[in-house]
Structure formats: C-alpha cells, structure tokens
Amino acid sequence: MREGMFWIERCAILRLRSVSACLVASLGEFSPLFVMLRTDGRAADSLRHVTIEPGIAPHATGSALVSFGSTQVICAVMVDSDVPRWMREQEKPRGWLTAEYSMLPYSTLTRKPRDISRGKADSRGTEIQRLIGRSLRPCVDLEALGARTLWVDCDVLQADGGTRTAAITGACFAVEVACAELVRTGMLEASPFRQRVAAVSCGLSGDDALLDLNYLEDRDIDMDLNIVMTHALEIVEVQGSAEGRALTRPQLDRLLDLGAKGIGELAAIQAAAFDAHNSSLS
Image (tube, rainbow, N blue to C red; front, side, top):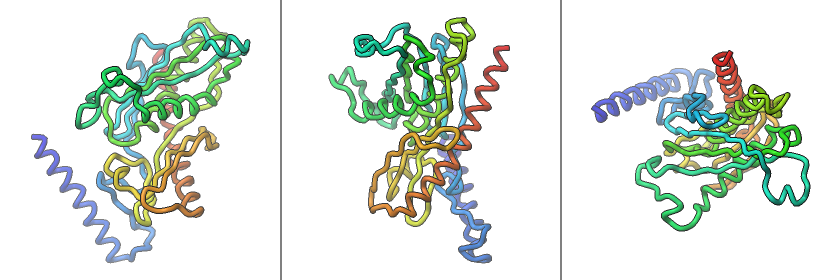
C-alpha cells in the first residue's frame, strides 16, 4: 500500500513537471507564468504545509505540535518561580527564558541514541537550543515576567529538514500561550509577551532560491540560511554556510527577501492559531 501511494505521488510530481516544461517551451523561460517545481511539487517560494496544534502537552503552561510538512516538533513551556543562580547573585530584577532541544530516537530513519546513553550532550543539539533561547528572548519583557524562568522544551518527533526553524516558530506560539495563562490564572496582571518571532530556511540550488528546505533539498543545497525575524520582519538572527560555493551580496539579499516572505506567512499562521486557541477558552 505504501509503495502504491509513493507511486501515485511520484506520478503527480512528474505530471506537474511536465506541465511546467510545456509552459517553458511555449512561453519561454522568463515568462511570468514559469514556476520552478520541486521534488514535493512546491513552487520555489512556497512554504511546506504548516500547522500549529495547541495543547499537545496538557501539563505544560503552554504547548503545541508544530508541523512543517513532514517535520514535527513538540514545543512546551513550563514556568518555574525562580531564576538562575547567576541572576540572583547579581540581583537582576527580571526573569529569564531558556530552551532545551532534542531529537527523539525514532525521529530519523535510523535510531538516534539519547544523550544519556552516549554519556555526553550532542553538540548540534546544544547549538540549536542556544539558538532557540536567543531567538525567543526578544518575545518577552523579562522585567515584566518577574522572578520566573520560562523553560522551553522542543522535542523533534519527526525530522525532514528545518527542525530548528520549526522549533522556534512553534515555541514562540507556546510562549505566547504560557504568558497569557499567567494572566488568566492571576499570577500576572498583564502579559509580558511583546512580539512574535518565526524562523525559516532558505537556500540556493544552482540559480534557484528555495524557501523552507526539506531534508533532501538541505542535503544537496549549494548554500543555505536559517533566518529568524519578528512579525515586523526585523532580523533577530541569521545563520548561513556556503556548502558548495561562496555567496554574493545580491544573493544574500535575495535569500533574506525570500525568508521575509515566508516569515510573514508564518506570523499570520501563528496569529490565527493563537486567536483560535483564545476563542476555545472563552
């Protein structure tokens, strides 16, 4: 049955490519109707299908299952009525936000051992969780949060590229829900949540700029970026590496513009999910 479904999906992709080729032959490569189709049938500037399902972890203060295509990440926030020791020692009159990231053993095609069985932390996971924490702190007024820590946990359920960008996007939603819950339960008078952030990957494959890379695209891409922006499209962080060739300044600007387009769409998805969640509580 799975082989049959794969054959059907493959035929659909080939048919889309055939239609694209016909358009190019008839109208020319630079026709405004020309659309570069990818292995999953998307246009070059299209996101994967993105969903945010709230309340996936009932014991968390805020949580969501975020999906970017086949990539799925559980994002949960819990509130600790304390701050790190270094903040207490420095008498910092504010709260803190920190993040942890992990890939579940069955999230990839071959089993990924847990850190505890390896006896050391995964360096990639450590780098990603620091990125998540840095990306989310601009979302929250830490002084208004008070002497509390927001613990953000991002666990990858299924990996098909873009796990860090999906984690940031879903975790931002979970943080907003957690801040609203602090108000709803009377712990705070006003929400310390300030602004939404979202993240997306972009890359260059030949002369084509691609948005929201899946695993196969990320594996074979010439150059890729991970872009984090606010809902107002202000840059929070950009990570990039030249996999096969150096990047020119015009190419960088092209990728940043493409990323801004995707993040604008993600911010709208976050807002709609939060409004729907709020409506369900009233």
